[in-house]
Length: 255
Image (cartoon, rainbow, N blue to C red; front, side, top):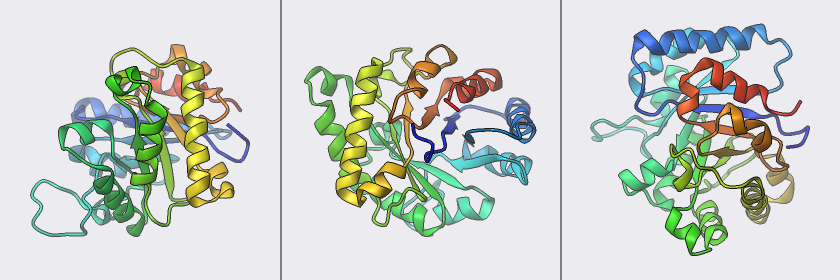
């Protein structure tokens, strides 16, 4: 992490949360962000669609950003159950996650689909968080670098810049398992991602783009992970459902 890349700590609540528990959680984080006049990181929560409006209303005029967990590639149409990027923007969202491994696996989303969704996000004025990551089988075959590089090249939207796009590395085998790669392995992949981005969007933009790590991030390993040279924050799953754990991860970022 360098001084020109402000850390981003993003919480993906996935399919978790009812108003009774989610609103106090969002409220605690919004209050903490507003009281942290010298906050050296950005904080984002991505609740399920049922909670987006309520959390957005709560976060209005605070320093807590809100985002969607997915968007459709089209602006409107006969797509029952889907949400467009324009709808997220209209609701007050600033970000949207695209290409999470659970979407790639459960909904058979290809790099092409992820790219289309990311481009829809940019067109709507949202910041796209583009997720990439290898499976356990791919890691065991020793092809992690090749797989992640191909995903970056295939999923990055046209017009991507450091201002409108964030890339998140989430090894599939580490998500929700309690397992994490070694720090050297994480840094190796992030360094490769930045090099690949430089080839695609130019070295200057690549050096400014925030690269997040995700996959069983928790307070006990956050200091080590957030201290890596090319890690600029975290995409947090389970630990983002606890305001104390999530805040501790955020404070682990180097100042």
